[in-house]
Figure (tube, rainbow, N blue to C red):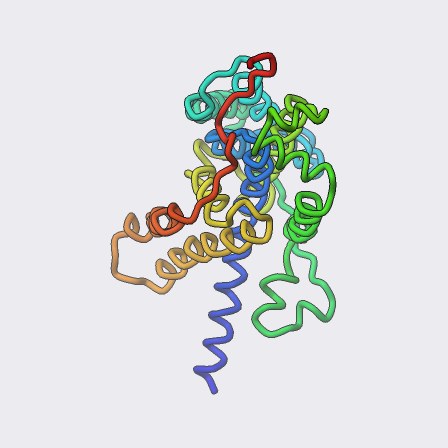
Amino acid sequence: MLEQMFTVAFLTTFLTSSVRMAVPLIFAGLGETFSEKAGILNIGVEAIMLSGAFFSFAATYVTGNLWLGLIGGMIGGMMVSLIHAVFSICLRKDQTVTGIALNMFILGATSFMFKILVNNNPDFPQISTFHKIAIPMLCDIPVIGPAFFNQDIIVYASYVLIILSTLFLYGTTWGLSLTAVGEHPRAADTVGIKVYTIRYLAAMINGVLGGLGGAYLTLVQLGVFMENVTSGRGYIALAVVIFGRRHPIGVFLAALLFGAADAFQFRLQAIGIQLPSQYLTMLPYVVTLVVLLFSAKGSSDPQSLGKPYIGDAR
């Protein structure tokens, strides 16, 4: 009986942690899905999330309002994504190089701005975080209930977003137009679809959602900001998109897998596994490499992914 209770408690705690770890990847993965569906490969997801984490913290730190912090994070992520869009769509630069450059630039810029923001504060600055909201009846379901239905409002928003994204991409004319731009932009342009406009809009969505994923780290998980707070989650989000086949539900399930790997390494450390902490910390990244290894063969990228569109070329 005691063993059964311990097993249920362990599974509940583990699954709850997995969901919390997966949420930033869900938002960032959904944002990148929109971007890649439109033909824009943004390796700078790490920069978007990091910018979202910083500006959400800064807005909350200055105003004391979590909702303004959430808006600040989304705006911060959107601005970084739009920088990438200008270089990729308007200037037609290499999208991969632009994304990597943004990752490096935003890492330094957010660290510098954070030092300016808290320069006069002798203590390590902290902010309040969103609290959990239990959904009656659903939260009482064994194991699954506390994990999925005793969470904060941003987690619940991710559930709704997954459904809306699926309906938008596969059940609306706008979603089909976005997919057409990523597959055959010239054919789409021929039938009157505005390729550049759709790609900019996709970049904005990518920035807003990626920034929201970064904001979740500071406004829910940590309550603080620190240098490189994302710790490579932007790169894991790229793997989530590939493994999830650029489908919102697939992205959700893939994010849960990576979230479980992240939560598992914390569980191992908590129970005192006699291994160097560095080995346990690298577990999510090992899972990322393994998943990419097995999913590379079955990947079906949009035909124009990463390729600039030149409207007046023949």
